Length: 117
Image (cartoon, helix red, strand yellow):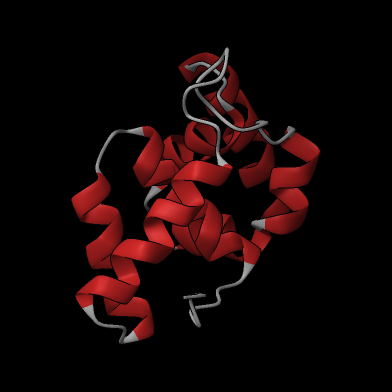
């Protein structure tokens, strides 16, 4: 049975980041909230994403995004977080997407914040 659930790349990445933190139940709940799907269908979708991520591979994570990719693909989300005075959440989001450390993510967000002002 193929899942009929479909999300944008941004939403799928959000669900993958939840899975990378070993929070499968939270990922299923998020899929259900966003899609209105039932438990079985949402669980199947999340399990499919997890299989596609190759969680058992060498790194345990899918390819991480570069800062340029993050700025391009998640511009609206980052801008919204910063304009809502949620800088810490923006830094956390960049860390999830990039796999970079706190200092690198903070430096990126500091520069991005200057660029949008």
